[in-house]
Each structure stands twice: as C-alpha cells, then as structure tokens.
Amino acid sequence: MELMTRGPTRTARGTLLATSMATIMAAAIIAPSLPAMSSYFGSEVLVRLALTITSLAIAVSAPVAGRFADRWGRRRLLIGSLLLYAVAGSAGYFARDLAVLITTRILLGVAVGGMMTTVSALITDWFDGPRRASFLGLQQAFASLGGVIFLPLAGLLAAGNWRWPFWIYVVAALIVPFAIRSVRDERRTGGVAVPLDQRPTEWRRVFGIYGLALGATLVFFMAPTQLPFLMASLGIGPAMTGVVVAASTVTGILGALMFPSARRRFTPATITAASLVLLGVGWLVIGSTASVVLVLVGLLIGGAGVGVVVPNLNLRLSELARSNQRAQVLGGLVSGIFLGQFLSPLVAQPLVQTIGIRTTFTASGLLIAVAGVAALFRFIHNERKDK
Image (tube, rainbow, N blue to C red; front, side, top):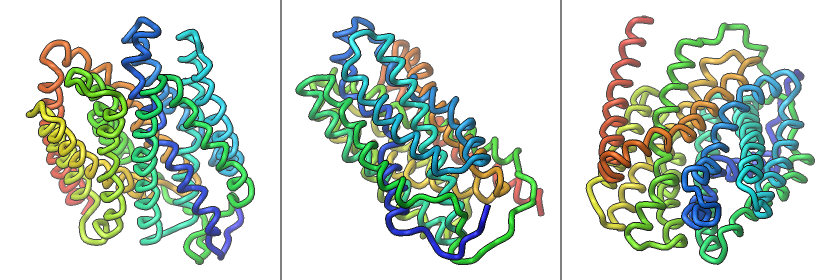
C-alpha cells in the first residue's frame, strides 16, 4: 500500500463523520415503534428480535468485513456498505411479514458492520498520535449526534405511523457520491510516511478490551430496548420516548469531544474505569426513581460514560494491533459492541420479569460500576507486571 504525505481531504473527513452518524444507533431507530409493531405483528418477543437481530448481524459480519478491508481495501467496502444500508434499512417500510422484516434487519446489520469497521480503519490509517485521538473523539461525537437527530425524529414519525421511521435509513444513499469522490485507500499518517509495522498484535489485551466493550454495551443498550416499555407504563407516548432515549447520546457527544483532552491527562485504564463508573451511576439513578426527569438525568450521566469509553477503546486497539491487521482488530471491537446490543434484551428480560424493570436497572448499574473499578486494578496489575 503506497504511503502518502498529504492528509485526507476535508470532504473525505466529512464523509467518515457523516457515515458515523448512521452507525451506532442504527438498530435503535425503530425503538419508538416497538409497542405499535408488537400490536401489528402480534408478538412482542419477535418484534424485539427485529431490533436486536441487526446487532447480531453486525457482530458476526464485522470481523469478516475487517479481513476484507485489510486485504482488498477500505473504499469499495465503504461504498457497498452504504448502498446496502440505504436499501435494506428502508425496505422495512414495505414488510408485511415478520420474517421479511427480520431478513431486512439482518442485511442492515451486515451493512453497518462494514461501515463501522471501514471508518475506524481509515481513521487509524490516516492519522497518528494526538491527531488520531482527536479524530476518534470527533467520530464518536458524530455517532452520538446521529442518535440525537435520528431517535427523536424516529419518535415523531412513529407517532404518525410505526412504518415511517424506516425511511430514515435512506440518508446513507446521500453519502455515497461523496465517498466515491473523496475516499481513497492510501495510508496517511499526519503528513509523515512510516514503514509497515512488523510488531506482533497483542491479542491477549485485545480480547480483554473486546470483553469490556461487550459488557458496557450490554448494559447501555437497555436504554432503547427497555425504556420504551418503562415509558409506556408511565403514560409517555413514542415521540417523548424518542427524545428521552436520545438523551443518552447528548452527553455522549460531550464525552467524546472531551476524550482527546482526557487522553492527554489520564491513562487509558483510568479513562475506561471512569467511563464504566459513570454508566453504572446513570443506571442506578434510573433504577431508583419513577420520575421521567430523573430517568433523563440518569441517561445523561450514563451517556457521558459511553461517549468517552468507545474512542478510548478504539485508540487502545489501534495501538495494540499491527498495521496490516488493524481493520480486523477494530472489526472485533465492533463485534463486541454489537454482540452486547444483541444480548442485552436476552439477558435483561428474564430479570425484568423476575425483579422488575427498575430493579434490573439498579442491579446492572451496580455491576458495571464494580466492573469498572475491577478493570482499573487489572490494568494497573498488568502494567506493573510488564515493567
């Protein structure tokens, strides 16, 4: 792969940020429609599956996408994934059979797996050092911004008809011309050409990071999968539900924008631990109240934690991975994140039925906060051991 001395164009950077907006909350866009969809199809469990099966498809396809991107290049995968996203996502509008709907959601997941893996790989190809940390934070901010824009919009559309939110996915088609024009596979690193990295990938630590991502996302994704039903029990309609669920992405933007500064001041282990503790505290607040206002406060706290932890884990993996395995390693992080999304309702629902939804939020918040502290001590132990 030829090394370039010029940086990516402004259009290329904007294309990656726009693509990021359509990824993290892609499955959750139909969350405000879940109650109405359950009534239409007559199966609450299978309708929930229509939301979460997308996450499973992302988890399965992302490592394959990473291997493809490392071997054949990022550009063609990005363009194809954007096109598939637009077609498969909007196809849900026309589905009259639950099996057809689930099939379109699987294809949507394949598209998101390709988009996320390619975007992360391109960022770590194009930037190095502080510029990489800065752009990864900006990427996560735009991913959160997508939630701020698309989830309330989905709620408003769902209030009119539960099918209307599926048209939001067409936005990916608008990005395709810019991707064709500006995105190239050439590797750029802040204006300095560097040789191919020959060091081995540190797989033990890589898989540890995957586990952390899975656990954090499993807890965080209770927001779109459980809160719509909690809000419905409080007499809140889908439009307001979309606004409340999107609140978790508002502070996610702020957390992501603060990440480059945090990375300069604190170790990756400290940032990870603090992020998980914030997520835990937010869920403890949700579990302790029946007030919509305090639910909103809890989502804001938890969202700040997620906004910091995702770019931190992305950057840490880019440091641990060999350059010609980078897309594959980052694809594994995408798998961990979205496997957590898929498992979230499967793990949470039995608890909700046994101990209630608020107690489930309390228990999961306590668990993830303790995990954050434990992870900090584990990282400190590993660093001392390496020395």
